[in-house]
Amino acid sequence: MAVQLNIIDTGLKPYAEVLQIQTDLFNENVSAKLDNRPTKNILILCEHPPVFTLGKSGKRENILVGEADMQAEFYNTNRGGDVTFHGPGQLVVYPILDLDALNIGLAKYIFNLEEVIIETILEYGLKGERITSANGVWLTGGNNDRKICAIGVKASRGITMHGLAMNVNTDLSYFNKIIPCGLEDKSVTSLQGELGRKIDMDDFKGKFLKSFANIFN
Image (cartoon, one colour):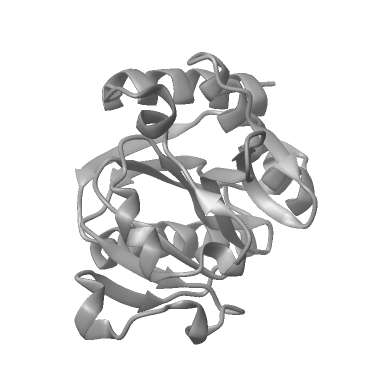
C-alpha cells in the first residue's frame, strides 16, 4: 500500500528557520510513535542563503577559512557526515519519514535517496553513480570523481530528518573554502556545470518528486 506523502516547499529560506520547521515535525513524529499514534511522512523542499554546516562527526579543520572569510553563515548540526555548503541554486530536501511505515532500514533509506537522484539526473542524460566509502551521488570519468549530491541524515526511533543537497545551479566557488565531506581527493560539480546551461528549478523539482514517489512507493 502506498504511503501518503506531504510536500512543503519553503522556497529560499534561512537554514535556521527550516531547521526549526523540520525539528518540530521530527519531534511530533517521534512523540506520535511513542504514543502509538499515526505518523506523517513529509518532504521539505527548499533553498538556503549561503551557509556551511558541519556534521556531528565532522572535523573543523575541513573548513579552510575563518568565519570572517566564509561570506556565509555557519552551523554545527546533528546529522551524519562532515562539512558541506548550501546556497541558492541548490535543491535541499529534508525528508521527515517513518522508516517502519515504509518497511525499510537506515541503510536502504540512504540507498533509496541516492537512487532518487540517480534516476532524476538520468532525465538530463547524466549517469550518477555510487562510490566506495562515500555517501551521495557522483559523476565519474575524466580526471576525478565529482559529487553532485551530498547526503547526511539523522534517524531516531525510525524517524528521519536532515537529508540531501543536490547541486542544480549552485555557485561552486564556495566549496573551495572547505574540504567537502572531508574527502580531499574529490571535487564537486553541479547540473548546470555539467550541462553548460542553467536548469529550471521547478522542472527539476517535478522530476525529483516523480522519482521519489517511484523509488519510495
